[in-house]
Length: 113
Image (cartoon, rainbow, N blue to C red; front, side):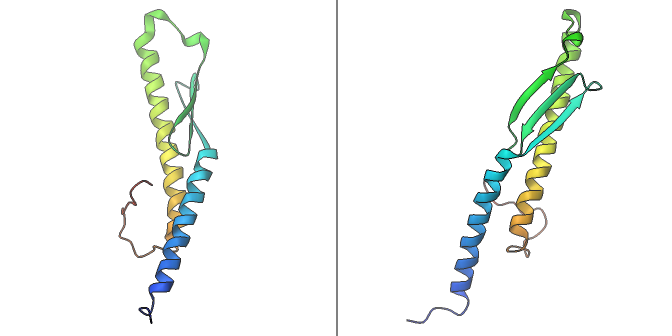
């Protein structure tokens, strides 16, 4: 039975894309990005999977009378770390899918990635 002309190639291409995506996701777990706020008094590390790994706070900025300021600094650092992690993840996944799925419209997202 003869298959449609490019169906075998398309299936192989989809399988290769799936393998490359799985490999890239595993690599993202190993990538660490860092962000800080307040001139470095708060430092946050996140993985390429956009998960917070650690938060470091300089003990000298812990003032019971300034809790709100500390909360704001932590929030700013966490948001920046997550933004940095997302950028790394987007770049990595785009490079993996780019060659195989270059015809997708800008901004198209693959569910789960």
